[in-house]
Image (cartoon, rainbow, N blue to C red):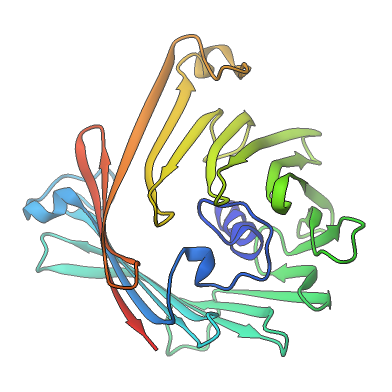
Length: 317
């Protein structure tokens, strides 16, 4: 559940995978680096091993099955705002005999200013049972006051910098189900109002549990992420480096960390981004594009070779 609320922070505020620019004027197409008047996207992703049509043992409750089929569907309006989002996961013995094991349908609602006001998710589109519901309240146009949801953090309050001409968020306070302060998310900004530092303070533990430092290129793509503190699930201290092609799509991702961290505790990162007993992992992405400049095939290559393949079908207005 806590992982889902981290996604909530990302989806409402950051809105982008590789850029941390606080720019609310961007729509749901541009934050995904999509060009043209996109109406609908259908994106399949699958593990490369599954193409070989062979069974492989999976630890846990699904022996002799293969994972790796995921389908995402997204629909946008003519203004570039997302209307609905469907995620489907599959399980199967081979490419032809796959079974749907999880499906989530998300619908977005807007006010007259084009701001998202509600995000509702269901596991069954025909059912009235709501899995999660997020309500976004505004104090003025584009300026979020608070976010309420049925989650680990049922309330998140937003606070801004003193510049009234910009909706630049200074901090977010997340409350638990007992209306107690749980986490404080702090933001610092650099050039073009891009986030330069992001920090999470845990009120219960009374310490900082995550700190990230960002650097960007001239196109405002995130090119370096330093994580000196990572005392949270799914996070690890280290250095992330990113390279892009001329279409601003990520083509190389390098992650360096210390093998000593699990033994000696947290490792301080020095200015040269070097560790004792350092290990780095590299991921390469290759693309095929349509005539609009949007990728329709993405191949993810890791140390052992191709690990993931993504196929897209894009419909335009």
